[in-house]
Structures are given as structure tokens and as C-alpha cells.
Image (cartoon, rainbow, N blue to C red; front, side, top):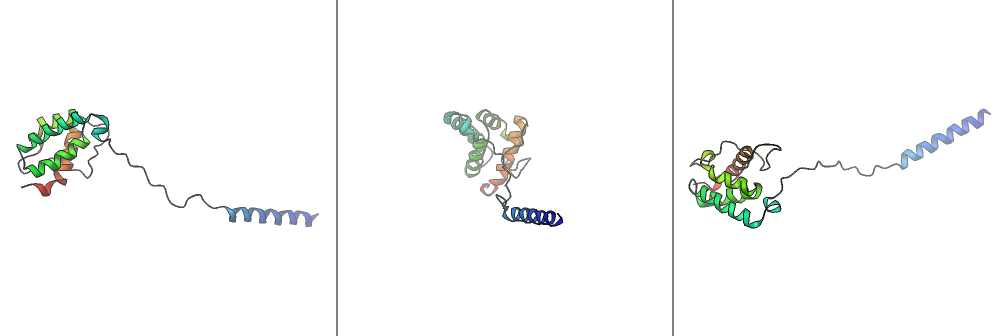
Length: 138
């Protein structure tokens, strides 16, 4: 009787060991976190609305900076912000970007934090592009 019990235990041990040896994880590469990115303005608004807002912002920027700097900042700002936000930014640009092109706020990403006001979105995006486009300043 003892031989049968021992033989059963040995057989079970080999079965468990064989199953553990045969197990291979599906993937050894850790999953990368998915980063949220803001939608492009053209994916949510018409080309005409984005173009009109872009021209208004560039004209307002030209009152404070050179053409190369304004081209650079306008391209990014008109892509990230919605046309109504770009129009607001154009009307209030003198409050945020001075003659030297400095912005009050500079961030490391053009994607504004979630759930912030329009003014904070504009300040965030303008700050990012003011810093990114600094080489184009006079």
C-alpha cells in the first residue's frame, strides 16, 4: 500500500514539475503606458475656421515679434488650441508675450492639463511654443 501511495506522489510531482517547465509567459516585454494626446484642432474644427484663427493670431503676434517667431508659434498654437481659443489668444497676446518673446509660463509639453480653463490652456500652450520657438526671436 505504501508503494502505491509513494508512486502516486512521485507521479504527481513529475506532472506538476513538467507543467511548470512547459509554462511560458505570453510576453516578457512590459506594457508601455498609453499617453493621452490632445486632438488636433483640424480633427474637431473646419480648415476654414482653423485658417481664419491662425491668420488672426499671426497678425496679433506680428505686432510684438518678428515674422519667423510668429510663424513658429502660430503653427503650434493653431494646431493645439481650438479656433475660438486661438481668437481669444490673439486678442490678449500682449498680456502674455512681451517684446522679447518671453511667456509667463513655459511647460515641457504642448498638451495642457485636463480640466483647466481656456485662459490656462492658452497660457500653457503659448508658454510651450514661446520657449520652443525662442531661436527665432530677434
